Length: 439
Image (cartoon, rainbow, N blue to C red; front, side):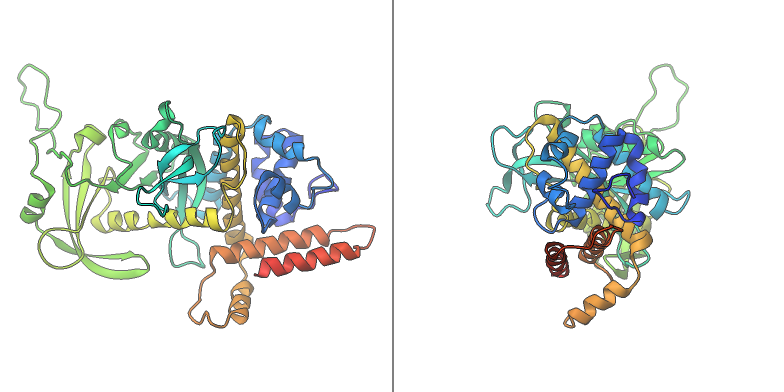
């Protein structure tokens, strides 16, 4: 428990929260723990005051104490993300194993001209034909893990960087590379394998650290070259790249495909793939890359082309690694729909840049808590008993994780040792909270 009589934190959750203590002063850390518990326990809007209400502290703490944490308190959102990443890797990734990372960007819709860095961005979920929306655009980095209770890969978001037009931060690839480099520096001795879609391929990837590999989808008009020839011994600058290779369509027609067995999207199947080692000089510079042409159905041509700077990976590993990228799409949807990330209505620069990383870290804490101490099997059996129409449900969902953690937080709040007995209002409040949590 925290040394604060107004805040009761379950011991299992406090163990994870204590990993963030070095980032804050003692008063700010108590506020961080209170708002984190309120964010995870709140079934309604996760605004700043909503977090305070979710923790049951709206009558004990002034609301400016909560706003102070985001707008003026001295802590670094990047360091918070790295602490969350170290927590996830240490508890959910086998020791010494490479760390798989997925990167993507998303738009959190906002209103108002005074919201820092808000502008018009592409929004794939928009209903209009233009596919644009107004708000804050964030680049999200997630650690992809395998949980014993899940048959699919799970992306755990840990870091977020705000896209700011008119600055270096306007480039999503620039932000993604720097997050990957900082993560690699925070995890010495670990290989960091980044996977992203075709939007995250460009000249920013030249000179990547050897500890970091990058896998993405190859554009059909990519200019590929052969490996540089051996030095001839003649005077002059040696060649840095070989001859220009034909287009991907011609390469697919001239290259022999072989059958490989892959497991992706919860299915194991045999497909055809061709592997080419070459240079994508305009993107990766002189670093050799492996191009994998994937053919899902027997025939001519190819379906998609993948490229990776991890030349030691097999074709099956590259295909499975790229397929696991879809887990970050699921994680971002869970962030918005279940955790309420982006619902805080901060407007100043400091508050806007600090709130979403805080909420992303809370999501990582929730998933890590469930994977380490929360899963018992009873929650799944109870869900199937209360919802008998889920006849095929055999694995917990993210919703099950949030409901279980919310119940634990509610129990700690109302069943904590107190000299007085609970009032009728408290009993009524806990009954309503349990009904909302079970909904």
